[in-house]
Image 1: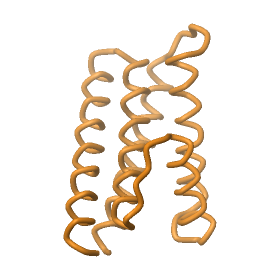
Image 2 (image 1 turned 180 degrees about the vertical axis):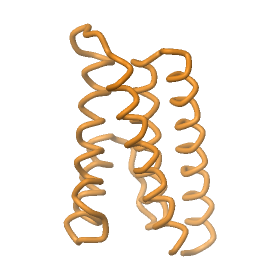
Image 3 (image 1 turned 30 degrees about the vertical axis):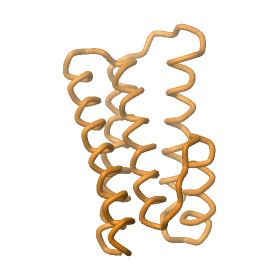
Length: 130
């Protein structure tokens, strides 16, 4: 990976980790809807880091999801659970930010936060090996 790609990937992964910390803080303060939002965005930024490591620039959420699926999940580099986690958390974030007002409980937010931690770590580990 060339220097500019490394820089971009590191910057996006830093953003992913900071956003994950925001999600943890929101969870500790019982702001579960915010936890879900920030957990998803941590995942999104991790995908952007992955894309940057390959020299790909992505700005749309749907493009990030497609990129991950096409270039990594479908090729067997990452397990299908990675794709599932991103798809589900994208839908959860959409529903909680723009959809009907539903109560979000701590168990749901806790599970999404746990998944986001695993997701970000998995992508970071892959990028670090490149």
